[in-house]
Length: 202
Image (cartoon, rainbow, N blue to C red; front, side, top):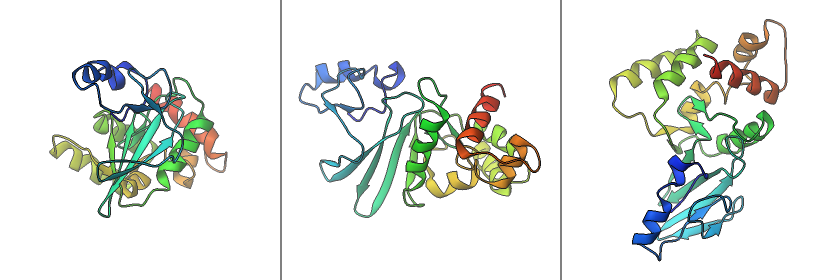
């Protein structure tokens, strides 16, 4: 069991699974995770069957949040829980913009072709906000049209998030101008905090 964080909608079934399959391994980021057997550290690689798994500590949504980068036969995926959604990110319930920016930077450093499996289907709502931030972004417009046609939008890719996710794009001039006003600049962390606050009230 690879648990991203301790919230009930991500860890709440662990005890039942372990009762039925008591020999299962259960990984997570802290003792707050239901059923935790192994607390993982950043980039402490381990194997499950033929899968190579690299946990990434990604605080911000919670302080014990873990993303799991999984590789097999040249294919790569990252399971992001509530850290990163398609064209969005999780609320900062326990962490700060500084925490979340460090986490986003870690995930963004993965290969562009990496499939991104996120914890909730918020894509269309996220894209509406992304379009509000960057109304001239053609990639966002195309993704909105695509998302309306499909039933499920997971997985995304790292490359697509770099093009359509306003939380990945806080250093882009178009995002900074929209958030701060023309001619103003600020750190990625400061802009990220402002974008998150805008999304929370959008």
